[in-house]
Length: 112
Length: 110
Image (cartoon, rainbow over all chains, first blue to last red; front, side):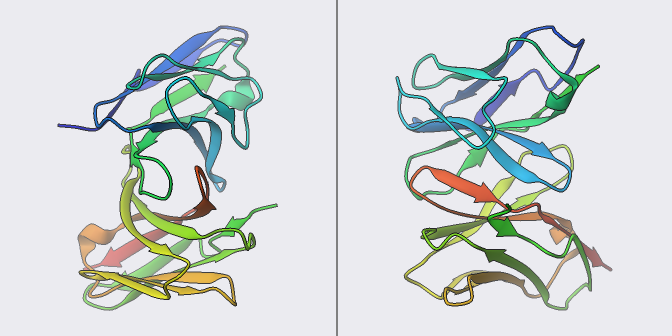
């Protein structure tokens, strides 16, 4: 089925470790996004990529880096994980502008 | 400062009745609004949207109302079904950047 695929689904890291969350979409969407969801906070935008080759900071970018590898793939990297980064991470894509998003199923990350 | 607020963390409704989920926003630049539904362990799924040039948009059992002067929108589900039990997020934004509310957990009781 067409959609947004995120890997891994679950991950436990020790403080200070690094990892990359992968996201790929097969809908030929221009825009891709990384969100984190914390209880009572809703979804908060970490970074987004309006089109291939561009990335911009969202509401909570500190501690993260992103790479728009090509039109399909948008990865999120934690260079030195901290317990405050324990969250559920969602990748999303959209055709661009004001269209509804398609979300991945999420990555549950725990930093101990 | 929360730009999008959903002041009811949870809501319970009897099957067959109307569910009304509310959302308030503060940013007057928002010109598009979205509602998403999320089941446990799944990603949010798009439900319905509304542009700021409209005050109502319907899609089957789902209707979204927008009151720009009050910076308020609501999602009506009628009739409510047990499968509608989920967390509902509203989002407001413009261009590429949308801000999501914290969500309201709807429970539809059989």
